[in-house]
Image 1: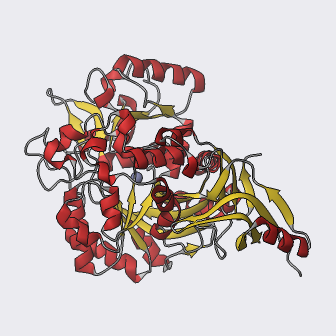
Image 2 (image 1 turned 90 degrees about the vertical axis):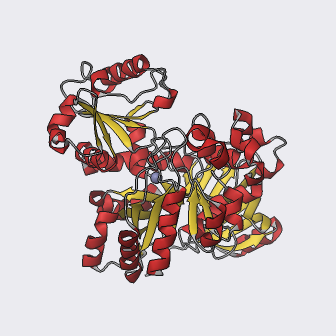
Length: 518
Ligand code: ZN
């Protein structure tokens, strides 16, 4: 039986790639794959010669390869779209107002809220169960801090989850009277979230919401971190329908299961692939759990939290590489990067680094050939407290995007959504300006770490594709998938870097099919 062949010619001001800078007036795709790109006359001629070829005039002023967000949390993002967003709260009273209004409006079976940041709240302390118990007494509630490493449970949730039994654990916080505050960290928080999260069918509809948002912003592929195992079959069957390409990283606990199944790396297809597992080497700078080689400036004696030993990490990397699976190692502090580099040397296995927020000069040579996913928006988001954590001397080691690229690392950009917003133009803006307009000290301390617009766009497309080890995406030259993002303005023609933020995504095509826009 003959299969339907879909031939499309796209006309517009097209960037095929940003490094090298290649432009074209049109491209031709056959069954979702770019087969020709060049002057519009030539492509038009080819289109006319092929029966059934459809001509598409791209709206907008320019277009390029779809953005690839190399590290985000699709479940967290979907949840955020369906749960209470606390990022704007500046006091406990405001937080309480939001909780009250949300319960009235949505009446959810479980209250899940995310985004409070004590550094930005008047009280400058963690939220406790005593702040919310009177508002939510008849159902579980969990209020996750912006970093995702700390959260607050109400008394109902604490009882339901038996948190009392974990008393004494460093991840269960008690007050000076020895009473549980409801504040839990790291593993305890992750387990609580797992226990309280919605059933798979509902969760898949949240993921679909997240996919729609990303496509509307021109993101066509994501590195999906910490995929819950129970969503795996749903994702494998639904990604194509959602039209978002997903590259999956499961929690490290799933490694044994993957070994048992004998699942080889890259299991899946061009829409969805099981890449490997994600391991946390440390926590976050905001919560002072990122592992530093020297103590925090604002917490003498504290160096953060080491979640895994060199031996454990190297063992995980060896096991994964035997199966051809990837390992994404969350390493924010320079201490965690030391740990990664040691594990890499010990195992001889390849893996990728997530964040690399703090990198010393002596660590740069070790990054050669290592895949690294960085989040430019952290520069802007962390501006209020970064110097406090690190001190003036170490501030220059933070978010060294250009140095990391120059080290020979393979760098991709990402948002870590829902930690940062998914709009790629905010990330490009942050990478290019280093938050100069927001008064970020990093713009003054390390202006040389700023990226140019083509560099940022290159890392957000081809760079991220390389981090995800995917040769079919990140470029629109022939042989690549026709994943196209259409922009309201030509990003290489903006007069002021600040204007990058005003660029809107007009339409998105994935595999040559319209995924968003008119
Ligand atoms: Zn993350």
